[in-house]
Length: 180
Ligand SMILES: CC(C)(COP(=O)(O)OP(=O)(O)OC[C@H]1O[C@@H](n2cnc3c(N)ncnc32)[C@H](O)[C@@H]1OP(=O)(O)O)[C@@H](O)C(=O)NCCC(=O)NCCS
Image 1 (tube, rainbow, N blue to C red):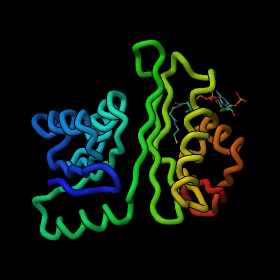
Image 2 (cartoon, helix red, strand yellow):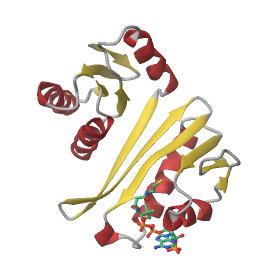
Image 3 (cartoon, protein in one colour):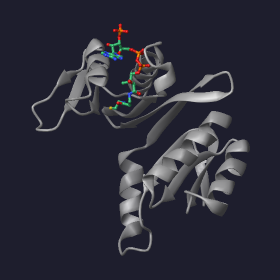
Image 4 (cartoon, rainbow, N blue to C red):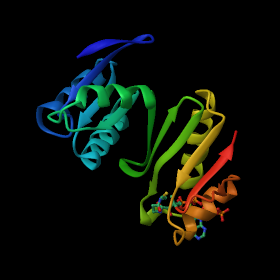
């Protein structure tokens, strides 16, 4: 399915976590389409999105949904409305991908959804660079607050976020937020 999204065409690809859907994602990204990738397996969708965005500078949104379930169309629309934009950034060291981040924005709120750095290259500034990039991006997209969650025992991630001014919220989980 294709539509216009700003100045570039938008393609919604179902079954995008592998096979022909994944192949179409690469073909359409090479043609400069924005992509919305839909499938059930979130991990595989994120893998596809990571590889696509490491090769093509196109916006990619990931939505995990089982389209065989009743009401799936409505939920897909809700998900598209709630997360209008997702950014994927991949860090390269020579020809290897060593770090990545996924950031989303929905209305006034930004979300740092994933940040990970390969153990072999930690403590070299990749994490800081990706978090700074994500905060800047959600701010440019109109967010005035940004959230991230992690585990209390993840001391390196906590130190990283707190060094950016995030504060732990009284949510029961380890959710951190900061105003922009
Ligand atoms: C958390 C993570 C992304 C940090 O990436 P990194 O590239 O090693 O971080 P940086 O080199 O940019 O360090 C930035 C800051 O993070 C904090 N930090 C990073 N490693 C740390 C460690 N081992 N102990 C304590 N603080 C640490 C520090 O505040 C550091 O600033 P400093 O160097 O001025 O002290 C990385 O450890 C990682 O991928 N962990 C596994 C995945 C994960 O937990 N992701 C976050 C889930 S929400």
